[in-house]
Length: 148
Image 1 (cartoon, rainbow, N blue to C red):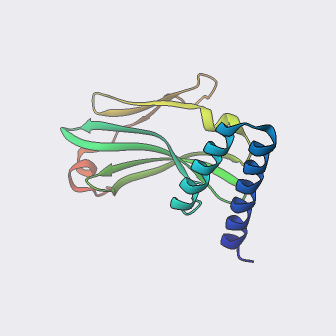
Image 2: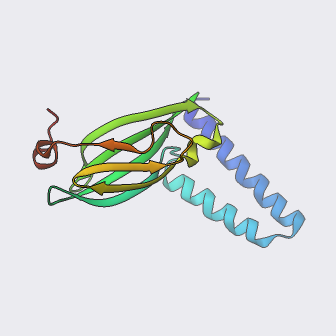
């Protein structure tokens, strides 16, 4: 089986198990949640990467979408900060940090994206030494979508 086929097989099997558990335990809410999650996962093509924070911000008078995503590979997860202008046009991308799969704390350290005097600030846990993290994006990137 290919990796994709394995993922779909496991997704299907997990769904079946949740339905069996909901029937045996008579927890109808579990069946509803399993059904929702199953179909949502299929619509997303079982994509594991997700947007943790997403804010509409204004930089230099321009509306921008600021996104902090968590991306996964077979062994690690990565926090990635992205700026989008218009309809899904990426004008800036920066990998912030990484951790081994299974470190749940990594998924909870980022709390908010704000802008102060055209500087983007990512706030989060006080236990993380690089937070708050500041991005001073040049106006040329915002205006033209090019990195200097």
